[in-house]
Image 1 (cartoon, helix red, strand yellow):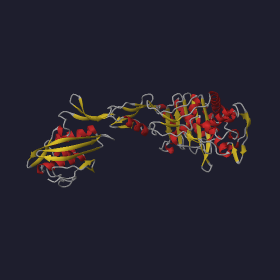
Image 2 (cartoon, helix red, strand yellow):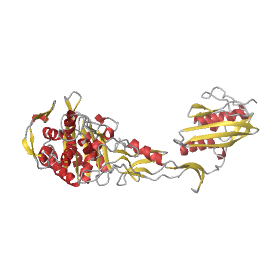
Image 3 (spheres, one colour):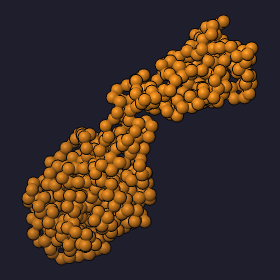
Image 4 (cartoon, helix red, strand yellow):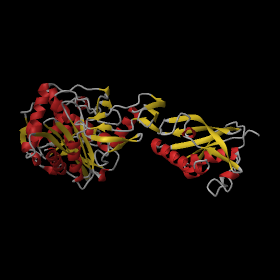
Length: 524
C-alpha cells in the first residue's frame, strides 16, 4: 500500500502530523460523525483507523463497539478519560501488519504536560470482518485488568493559603482555583499563576487494586508545596466591605509595617477589575504633605512648633494657591497647619526649598522605589525634581506632576509607622526583589510626623476617625481634569496596619475617611 499522511484528531480539531504508514487510513463509511458500517464489515486497517478516530473524538461508545468486548471497552475508555481529565487527546495509526496495528497515543494533561506513547491493537476476526481485541493494554501497554491510570502532581489539596493557613486556592486537576471567588478577586489570578508556575512537577502512574502505584511518566518534583500568601482573609474581607460601601469607584491597600506583608487589596465594582489600587497613578493631593513636611523639617525651614501664616490664598509667582473652600486660620504652628491641611502654609514653605527637595523626600517614603513582587505589578509613584517655581508649589500640595498609587501611599504610611524602609511582600517564602530601594528620614523627623498625623485625627481633617482607635493619618483632595472634580484620599495607620483609601470623583476627603472608618471597624 502507498504511504499516506495521517492526522492527530484532538478535541474534534485536526492537527497535522505526517506519518509514513504501511496501511491505508480509510475514511469511515458514512462520515466521521454519521452512521458507520458494522464492525463485521471492516477490514484490519479500517477497524484500526475507525477505532483511533472514535477514541480521539471522545466517542467512547463507538470506539467500544469496534472491539470484541464493547461494554468493557467503553467503560475502561471512559474511566481513563475521567481519571486523566485531558485537555486534548489524540490517537493515530502508525501501521497495520497482519493481525495487529501500531497506535501512537498523546494525552495533553494541562499546560506543558504532554504524555505520548505507542501501544498495539490486536485485531481479531469478527464474522466476515475484523474487530479490535480489547484488553486494558489497548489503553496503555503496561495496564492490566483491575488497574487504573492516575495523574499525580499539584492536583489535590491546597495551592495557596493565607497568613493564618486558611485555604484561598485549591488544586482542581492541574489548575489552582479559588475556594471563594469573592475573596481577593484582584489577586486570585496572580496567585493562581504563581502557584501554577511553582507546580511544574507531575507524573502519570498505574494504580493496582491494592492501591500500590508504579510510575509510567513524569517531569520534575511530583507534589508542589502549598504556598502561603501574606494576605489576611479577615483584613481582606474588611477592606472589600469598606470599598463596597462607596457609591463611587473606591480602592484600598493595607500593608503590615513591621513585615511589609500586603494584608489586603480591594476595589469595588465601580473601580473595575484592573488592579489600579496597585499600579494606578493619581495626584495624591494633601496626603503628599507628609513628604513636604519631611522636606521642610530636614531643610530646617521650620519645626513642628514654628508659627506660620495660613491665609485663605497666597500668590506665589504667577500661581495662586487657595485653601479648600477658601478657609483662613491666621497664624498657627506647623503641626496644626498640617492637621488642618493648609495649602497656603505648605506652598509658601516649599517655594523656598531646593528644586529636588520634594522628590528626595518622596523617595524617602518609597514613592520612587521599585519592587518586583511575584505575580503582581506595582507602581508606588513618580515624583521628580521641580522644573519651575510653579511646579514646586503645586507639588507641595500633591498636585501638578506628583503621582502616587494607593499602594504607594500605603507604603508611605507604613514607613512612618515602622520607622524604616518597608519591603512589600505578597508571599511567605517567595522573595520580593528590590530593584530601587530607599532609606527613610531620620527618627527625629518621623517622630514629628507621627505627632502631626495623630493630630489630623484628633483635631484636624479626619476627626471622623476619632472613634476608630489610635489612628494616625493624612487626608487629601486632588483635582483632576478641568479642575471641577476631585478625588478623595486618606492614608494612615493604626497599630501594625498601614493603609490608604482612594475614592475617584468623591470631591472631598470625607468619604475616604468614612470608608477608612468602615475598614478599621471591620478589623475590630
